[in-house]
Image 1 (tube, rainbow, N blue to C red):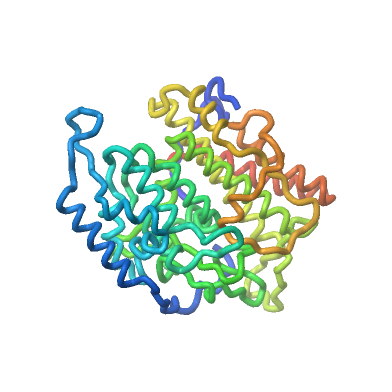
Image 2: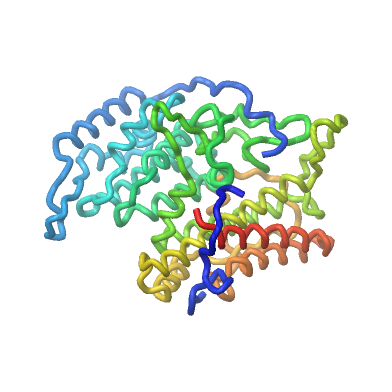
Length: 411
C-alpha cells in the first residue's frame, strides 16, 4: 500500500460516478552514477542564465484576458528553447546533485502564464525529455530533465495548456513514473537519474528499475529526494493534478493500458518472469518467477484505480463541473485499445515506444470502467497464450484487489 489512510473516495462502490460513458529482492542500485559528457553545456548555461534574467526583468504582466489577475509572461529566450531540444535538455537537466533545480522552477513553476506561454512551455518539456525518435533510448540528461520537471512542479497548480504536455512526458517515462508512484520516496535512490550501466540484474535476474528494460537506456529515478536541495519529485501528486484535464487523463490512461499489453506479452505462458533464476540460498527469500510480475501488475492496477478515484473526487467537489462532458472529452482523446501479441516477445523497446505502441482497435464498452478495460487485456492475452485458467484468474484477482483499494483510499 503506497499511502495509508481510510475512508471512501468512490461513489456507490463503483469506479463510475453517475452516467459515465464510456520492495523485495534487490541489489539496491549499487554503484555511483557515472559522470557524463555535456556536449552543449556552455550553450545550456547561457540559455538558462538568459531565461532566469528574463524572468527577473519581466516576471509579471496583466493577464491577456483583460482581467486584473497577473500572469507570468514567457521571455523570448525561453520561447527559443521550444525549437531547440538539445538546448532545452541542457537547460532543464538538474545534474547529478540537483544543484540546477532552481532554474527549472524559475522556468516552469507558474500557475498563471500569459497567452500561449503554457503551451510553449509544454513544447520545452517535450523537447527536453523526449527521446530522439522511435527505438531511441533516453539519455541521462533527458532523464535528469524529466526529474526536474516533476520536482519543479511539486505542489503547483498547472496553468491551462500545460497538463497535456506534462502527461505526455509521464507517458514517455511510463516504467519510471509507475515505479516511483508505487514506491514514493526511496532512500536507496542515489541521484535523479540512473545511467544505463546501473541496469544490472542480480543473481536471480532481478533488476531494481523494473522488468524488460531496454539496453542502453537511462532512467529517471523520481523516487530520489534531497531535502537540503528541496528536491522532491512527487509523481503521485502530479498525476492527481494532471487528472483534472481530460486530455491529460486520456494520455495517462492510454499509457497504462499500453504498458499492460507490453508487459504481458513478455511474460511466460504461465505469467512468470522469463529472466527469473531460483536462488540456491533460501535465506535470500522465497521469490519465484511470478513474484515480481504480480507486484508490477498490482501496481499498474493501483495507478488506474487512482485515476478513477481522482475523477470521482473532482466530480464531487466541482473541479469537474460536468462529468458527462469530461468523460466524452477523455474518450475523444483516447487513442484506442491495446492487445498483447499472440506469442511471447523478447524484444526490449525503450520506454517512449511503450506508450506510443499502435492500438489494436477502438475502445469497447465503458471506458471509465477501469477494471473491465484492464481485464479485457488480460483475457485476450490468456486466451491467445493458453495460460492456465487458475493462473489467469489469480492475476486478475490481484489486480482487482489493488484497483479497488486505490479507488477507495484517500491520499
